[in-house]
Image 1: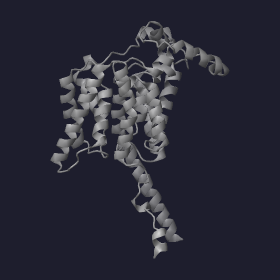
Image 2 (image 1 turned 45 degrees about the vertical axis):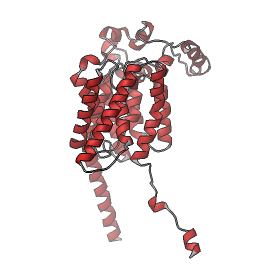
Image 3 (image 1 turned 180 degrees about the horizontal axis):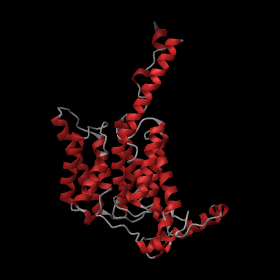
Image 4 (image 1 turned 90 degrees about the vertical axis):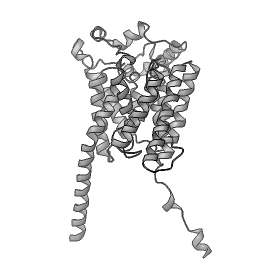
Length: 349
């Protein structure tokens, strides 16, 4: 009898993958350094917006649970949604409007598109687009103009014109990387890109701290809290399209696009790792995720172009969310076909 208990395992009661609550808690913790950086850089208006959006998100969750007769006092998913919504809202947005819009939008999302973990529309993207449509003037305009595109180097021209603040350590790190690394690859990175990677200075917090976003995404992928396939394909397809075709309509040059500048603006990294792959909105199979990521990369290129779009990635996510059920339908058909084929084979055997 004692031997039986010694051999007893807890595996039937263990998660094979982290639960949604644990993932939400991890994302919340990993995004806190960016909140700290907002405090360090004295971005107090952004911090107030984040605090208000978190409060509105939490209250919307409480009301939704009350309507559905659920008793949940602390929901990390609601806290993460509020935090991420606040990080996509420009610093100039009126605070009272932030609370009202976040509260109403999340209620609509929860009761029309499905509850937590089952929604087929990303509630953060839906809410941010809701903010944009009702207050376009608060979102910064695209910095890349036709004249800059015709010049052939829009990103570098914007950096050289002083549109982005350069860090004091930018030139030293750039020189070291060019000397000891990039020179062996036959390329040279101009000054300014290190600053964009560290802090782009955007009024939208999700666009600012690309280095912290990358570190957080590596940790989440390492612990299997997000799937890397769709985000990686999304970034790859978008980068290839920017590199090959972004300059052709304006200069006639092929494969001359500025991939680094494109990825470091418009919140592309943040969208890739925190928005593209979310519960309920993405296909489940490898093939489905690859197709989904490729479609996301294509629409990101068509909408965001080669960077500095303030809302293009959110529209990209919503469009892909609408397309995803079609991909999932074919996933189901293929799965049923394979199951039936296996059963027929076994019966004949």
